[in-house]
Length: 418
Ligand code: DLL
Image 1 (cartoon, rainbow, N blue to C red):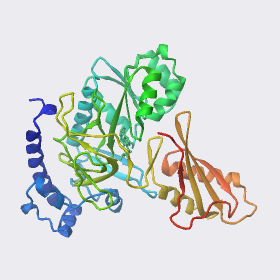
Image 2: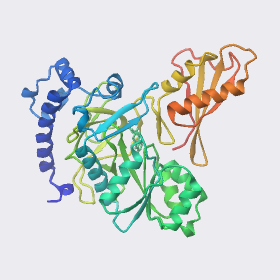
Image 3: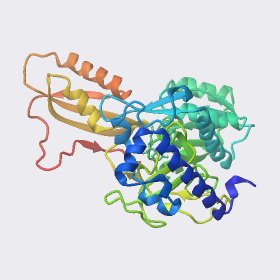
Image 4: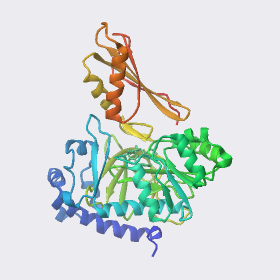
């Protein structure tokens, strides 16, 4: 039987069985979870499955930070075959690890999604997500290879070469951030381009942007979602373009009120919480993604029975996504405050120029002196680049020049339209 079209009751049976196994697995293999369960009064032998799910404690990004680098892992180091990492709040990244089976499940999930959009072995997929610690490049790479699709591991940047490859290798599908696609579209000569579909995600984007991309390029633009903690890019819309199918044999989802932690009902908007049912190296129980969306369990017109979640409508925390890179304002503050010439007053401005995100930071000097602000500006930009992996424009301003806040400081001004 095709797993993508299993009856809901069959899927629930799989989830029930896997969830019980998972609770014992993490309890026996991870000191982190053992401690957490004890604190929450959870005894794996009393755990009754799905109906007891809400008794399990949440996990969140802070837990990964607190246990840096591998304190939440549930396998010995010899079983890890790959690491990826994403930016953390201060200097340190959050590290994720995979067993060989984890990589297989990851590729399988995304491959299902790509196939549901119509990608086949006849296609040529240009992967213009970053290859490296970021999960985008490798995620799409292995998923597409699984389908027998020819991949071009172009990675990010070098727009001229991207377009040349696209033309010469007759690229039919592309995977990149939606903002990079807008940028590429500006320089594209539509007549030379054979694109029929694109997979866009890693940052928020809107229906309007989808329309713009589709009108400019003539392709079908599909949304795709995931996070490094869950594995990387995992879920896409199908051809119906009506939300991401969440593969229920591997992931169990809930929506909660981000303030109270209470479970919300079908269709209600709240924070997406995911329990991984198959991951070995870094299993996550009731992982708070920070992403705001809703669940749609109505049967999709495509016939797939797995639940869908709607477009990501925002974040429940202060994480910013700039050119697909996750940035916490606290990371920026951390870098600035390490530089003795700078005061604690700064502002972060986000704009979109020609489809690309631009981050500008204004920061005050601690005291007016004869410093060469140009050298200082370059030093700040260099430090930020090494921590954030992102270019920023820095403006050093005189003491007292920036706005002071009486209540909560609002240091981020996001002027991008999504
Ligand atoms: O962005 C994985 C990914 C790569 C997804 C390529 C899709 C395509 P992280 O760097 O860990 O992983 O960032 C995860 O990015 O919690 C969301 O806030 C945001 N995000 C990812 N996809 C979307 C999307 C990858 N389609 C964080 N719409 C997530 C809105 C998205 N936000």
